[in-house]
Image (tube, rainbow, N blue to C red):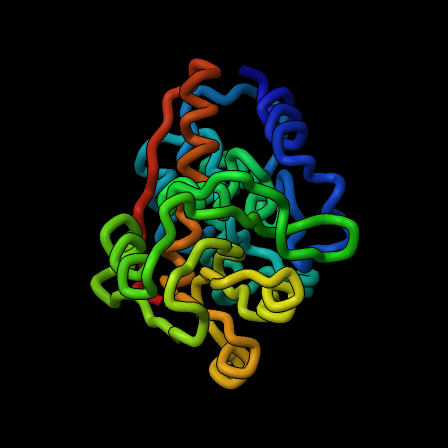
Length: 255
Protein backbone atom coordinates (compact mmCIF):
# COMPACT_ATOMS: atom_id res chain seq x y z
CA UNK A 1 0.00 0.00 0.00
CA UNK A 2 1.23 3.51 -0.77
CA UNK A 3 2.06 5.49 2.36
CA UNK A 4 -0.10 8.36 1.17
CA UNK A 5 -3.07 6.00 0.87
CA UNK A 6 -2.37 4.57 4.33
CA UNK A 7 -2.36 8.06 5.85
CA UNK A 8 -5.49 9.10 3.96
CA UNK A 9 -7.38 5.98 5.07
CA UNK A 10 -6.53 6.61 8.73
CA UNK A 11 -7.45 10.29 8.45
CA UNK A 12 -10.83 9.34 6.99
CA UNK A 13 -11.56 6.69 9.62
CA UNK A 14 -10.60 9.02 12.48
CA UNK A 15 -12.05 12.28 11.12
CA UNK A 16 -8.68 13.85 11.83
CA UNK A 17 -9.46 17.25 10.31
CA UNK A 18 -12.35 17.82 12.73
CA UNK A 19 -9.91 18.06 15.67
CA UNK A 20 -7.30 20.25 13.97
CA UNK A 21 -8.08 23.35 16.06
CA UNK A 22 -8.88 21.48 19.29
CA UNK A 23 -5.77 19.42 19.99
CA UNK A 24 -2.28 20.38 21.18
CA UNK A 25 -1.05 17.36 19.23
CA UNK A 26 -0.71 17.71 15.45
CA UNK A 27 -2.62 14.63 14.37
CA UNK A 28 -2.01 12.62 11.24
CA UNK A 29 1.43 12.19 9.71
CA UNK A 30 3.73 13.78 12.31
CA UNK A 31 7.22 12.65 11.27
CA UNK A 32 8.51 11.48 7.92
CA UNK A 33 7.29 11.34 4.36
CA UNK A 34 4.14 9.92 2.83
CA UNK A 35 6.12 8.85 -0.24
CA UNK A 36 6.86 5.19 -0.92
CA UNK A 37 5.07 2.11 0.31
CA UNK A 38 3.94 0.65 3.61
CA UNK A 39 4.05 -3.09 4.15
CA UNK A 40 4.80 -3.40 7.88
CA UNK A 41 3.27 -1.20 10.59
CA UNK A 42 4.00 -1.03 14.32
CA UNK A 43 1.43 0.26 16.82
CA UNK A 44 2.05 1.67 20.30
CA UNK A 45 0.42 4.01 22.80
CA UNK A 46 3.41 6.37 23.09
CA UNK A 47 5.84 7.68 20.47
CA UNK A 48 9.06 7.71 22.49
CA UNK A 49 12.63 6.56 22.03
CA UNK A 50 11.86 3.00 23.18
CA UNK A 51 8.94 2.47 20.80
CA UNK A 52 10.71 4.19 17.89
CA UNK A 53 13.68 1.85 18.30
CA UNK A 54 11.36 -1.16 18.63
CA UNK A 55 9.58 -0.18 15.40
CA UNK A 56 12.95 -0.03 13.63
CA UNK A 57 13.92 -3.44 15.01
CA UNK A 58 10.64 -4.85 13.66
CA UNK A 59 11.40 -3.52 10.19
CA UNK A 60 8.35 -1.28 10.25
CA UNK A 61 7.67 1.25 7.52
CA UNK A 62 5.37 3.20 9.82
CA UNK A 63 4.68 3.62 13.53
CA UNK A 64 1.14 4.52 14.61
CA UNK A 65 0.66 5.91 18.12
CA UNK A 66 -1.87 7.70 20.31
CA UNK A 67 0.62 10.07 21.95
CA UNK A 68 2.97 11.71 19.49
CA UNK A 69 6.34 13.43 19.70
CA UNK A 70 5.17 17.01 19.15
CA UNK A 71 2.92 18.97 21.50
CA UNK A 72 2.06 22.58 20.82
CA UNK A 73 4.95 23.18 18.45
CA UNK A 74 8.55 22.11 18.23
CA UNK A 75 11.28 24.74 18.51
CA UNK A 76 14.41 22.58 18.27
CA UNK A 77 15.22 19.01 17.32
CA UNK A 78 17.95 18.50 19.92
CA UNK A 79 18.44 16.45 23.08
CA UNK A 80 15.54 14.17 23.92
CA UNK A 81 13.53 15.29 20.89
CA UNK A 82 16.42 14.34 18.58
CA UNK A 83 16.87 10.97 20.30
CA UNK A 84 13.22 10.16 19.70
CA UNK A 85 12.98 11.35 16.12
CA UNK A 86 16.39 10.23 14.81
CA UNK A 87 15.62 6.46 14.66
CA UNK A 88 12.53 7.16 12.59
CA UNK A 89 14.19 9.52 10.12
CA UNK A 90 17.35 7.45 9.80
CA UNK A 91 15.35 4.33 8.97
CA UNK A 92 12.58 5.95 6.91
CA UNK A 93 9.83 5.07 9.41
CA UNK A 94 6.83 7.39 9.17
CA UNK A 95 5.08 8.38 12.41
CA UNK A 96 1.30 8.66 12.34
CA UNK A 97 -0.38 10.08 15.45
CA UNK A 98 -4.00 10.18 16.55
CA UNK A 99 -4.60 11.80 19.93
CA UNK A 100 -8.06 13.30 20.55
CA UNK A 101 -9.52 11.79 17.35
CA UNK A 102 -8.68 8.32 18.65
CA UNK A 103 -10.24 9.11 22.02
CA UNK A 104 -13.47 10.29 20.45
CA UNK A 105 -13.89 7.74 17.64
CA UNK A 106 -17.12 6.02 18.67
CA UNK A 107 -16.34 2.55 17.30
CA UNK A 108 -12.54 2.24 17.18
CA UNK A 109 -11.54 4.65 19.93
CA UNK A 110 -10.16 4.24 23.42
CA UNK A 111 -13.43 5.07 25.15
CA UNK A 112 -15.35 2.66 22.95
CA UNK A 113 -12.91 -0.06 24.01
CA UNK A 114 -13.48 0.62 27.71
CA UNK A 115 -17.24 0.67 27.08
CA UNK A 116 -16.89 -2.77 25.47
CA UNK A 117 -15.12 -4.05 28.59
CA UNK A 118 -17.98 -2.79 30.75
CA UNK A 119 -20.67 -4.11 28.40
CA UNK A 120 -22.37 -0.73 28.04
CA UNK A 121 -25.36 -0.29 25.75
CA UNK A 122 -27.32 2.73 24.46
CA UNK A 123 -24.05 4.51 23.83
CA UNK A 124 -23.72 8.17 22.95
CA UNK A 125 -20.84 10.62 22.55
CA UNK A 126 -19.62 12.18 25.80
CA UNK A 127 -16.86 14.58 26.81
CA UNK A 128 -17.47 17.74 24.84
CA UNK A 129 -14.49 19.65 23.49
CA UNK A 130 -15.66 22.43 21.24
CA UNK A 131 -18.00 20.91 18.65
CA UNK A 132 -16.49 17.43 19.05
CA UNK A 133 -16.29 14.73 21.71
CA UNK A 134 -13.45 12.81 23.32
CA UNK A 135 -15.48 10.19 25.17
CA UNK A 136 -18.50 7.95 25.27
CA UNK A 137 -21.30 7.20 27.72
CA UNK A 138 -23.65 4.30 28.06
CA UNK A 139 -25.74 2.12 30.32
CA UNK A 140 -24.77 -1.07 32.18
CA UNK A 141 -27.86 -3.26 31.68
CA UNK A 142 -27.48 -5.24 34.91
CA UNK A 143 -25.81 -2.48 36.91
CA UNK A 144 -22.59 -2.60 38.92
CA UNK A 145 -21.62 -1.96 42.48
CA UNK A 146 -18.51 0.21 42.75
CA UNK A 147 -16.53 -2.87 43.77
CA UNK A 148 -17.78 -4.87 40.78
CA UNK A 149 -17.01 -2.13 38.29
CA UNK A 150 -13.51 -1.64 39.67
CA UNK A 151 -12.89 -5.40 39.64
CA UNK A 152 -13.98 -5.61 35.99
CA UNK A 153 -11.56 -2.86 35.01
CA UNK A 154 -8.74 -4.43 37.01
CA UNK A 155 -9.30 -7.80 35.36
CA UNK A 156 -9.40 -6.48 31.79
CA UNK A 157 -7.00 -3.51 31.67
CA UNK A 158 -3.21 -3.52 31.46
CA UNK A 159 -2.68 -1.40 34.58
CA UNK A 160 0.75 -2.79 35.44
CA UNK A 161 -0.37 -4.21 38.76
CA UNK A 162 -1.26 -0.77 40.09
CA UNK A 163 -4.97 -1.52 40.33
CA UNK A 164 -7.90 0.87 40.03
CA UNK A 165 -8.47 3.78 42.40
CA UNK A 166 -12.10 4.38 43.27
CA UNK A 167 -13.89 7.46 44.57
CA UNK A 168 -17.18 5.75 45.47
CA UNK A 169 -19.44 8.77 45.95
CA UNK A 170 -22.19 7.74 43.55
CA UNK A 171 -25.29 5.57 44.06
CA UNK A 172 -24.96 2.01 45.33
CA UNK A 173 -26.03 0.67 41.94
CA UNK A 174 -24.15 2.12 38.99
CA UNK A 175 -26.04 2.07 35.71
CA UNK A 176 -25.05 5.15 33.67
CA UNK A 177 -21.33 5.57 33.00
CA UNK A 178 -19.30 8.24 31.23
CA UNK A 179 -15.82 7.46 29.90
CA UNK A 180 -12.96 9.79 29.00
CA UNK A 181 -9.68 7.90 28.92
CA UNK A 182 -6.27 9.22 29.91
CA UNK A 183 -6.57 12.42 31.92
CA UNK A 184 -10.33 12.92 31.86
CA UNK A 185 -11.39 14.12 35.29
CA UNK A 186 -12.14 17.58 33.87
CA UNK A 187 -15.34 16.10 32.42
CA UNK A 188 -16.72 15.28 35.87
CA UNK A 189 -19.02 18.30 35.73
CA UNK A 190 -20.49 17.10 32.43
CA UNK A 191 -21.12 13.70 34.03
CA UNK A 192 -22.91 15.45 36.89
CA UNK A 193 -25.02 17.59 34.54
CA UNK A 194 -26.09 14.49 32.60
CA UNK A 195 -27.03 12.69 35.81
CA UNK A 196 -24.48 9.91 35.31
CA UNK A 197 -23.69 7.56 38.15
CA UNK A 198 -19.99 7.20 37.37
CA UNK A 199 -17.05 8.52 35.39
CA UNK A 200 -14.27 6.19 34.25
CA UNK A 201 -10.94 7.77 33.33
CA UNK A 202 -7.23 7.06 33.57
CA UNK A 203 -5.85 9.51 36.08
CA UNK A 204 -7.30 12.27 38.22
CA UNK A 205 -6.39 15.71 39.49
CA UNK A 206 -6.39 16.52 43.19
CA UNK A 207 -9.63 18.47 42.95
CA UNK A 208 -11.47 15.42 41.63
CA UNK A 209 -12.00 14.01 45.12
CA UNK A 210 -14.12 16.86 46.42
CA UNK A 211 -15.79 17.49 43.07
CA UNK A 212 -16.89 13.84 42.89
CA UNK A 213 -18.05 13.86 46.52
CA UNK A 214 -20.10 17.02 46.08
CA UNK A 215 -21.53 15.85 42.75
CA UNK A 216 -22.48 12.38 44.01
CA UNK A 217 -20.65 10.72 41.12
CA UNK A 218 -18.31 7.76 41.52
CA UNK A 219 -14.96 8.10 39.75
CA UNK A 220 -12.73 5.23 38.67
CA UNK A 221 -9.06 5.94 37.93
CA UNK A 222 -7.88 2.95 35.92
CA UNK A 223 -4.54 4.20 34.64
CA UNK A 224 -3.64 6.56 31.80
CA UNK A 225 -1.78 3.92 29.78
CA UNK A 226 -4.22 1.15 30.66
CA UNK A 227 -7.26 3.02 29.36
CA UNK A 228 -5.55 4.05 26.13
CA UNK A 229 -4.38 0.79 24.60
CA UNK A 230 -7.73 0.08 22.94
CA UNK A 231 -7.58 2.59 20.11
CA UNK A 232 -4.20 1.63 18.69
CA UNK A 233 -5.11 -2.05 18.96
CA UNK A 234 -8.31 -1.36 17.00
CA UNK A 235 -6.29 0.45 14.34
CA UNK A 236 -3.94 -2.53 14.22
CA UNK A 237 -6.92 -4.79 13.47
CA UNK A 238 -7.99 -2.37 10.75
CA UNK A 239 -4.53 -2.47 9.18
CA UNK A 240 -4.63 -6.28 9.35
CA UNK A 241 -7.83 -6.15 7.31
CA UNK A 242 -6.04 -3.96 4.77
CA UNK A 243 -3.51 -6.75 4.25
CA UNK A 244 -0.58 -5.16 6.08
CA UNK A 245 1.83 -6.93 8.43
CA UNK A 246 1.35 -5.46 11.89
CA UNK A 247 2.99 -5.56 15.32
CA UNK A 248 1.89 -4.16 18.67
CA UNK A 249 4.60 -2.69 20.91
CA UNK A 250 3.45 -2.97 24.52
CA UNK A 251 5.33 -0.60 26.82
CA UNK A 252 3.17 -0.09 29.93
CA UNK A 253 4.04 2.75 32.29
CA UNK A 254 2.10 1.71 35.38
CA UNK A 255 0.64 5.22 35.42
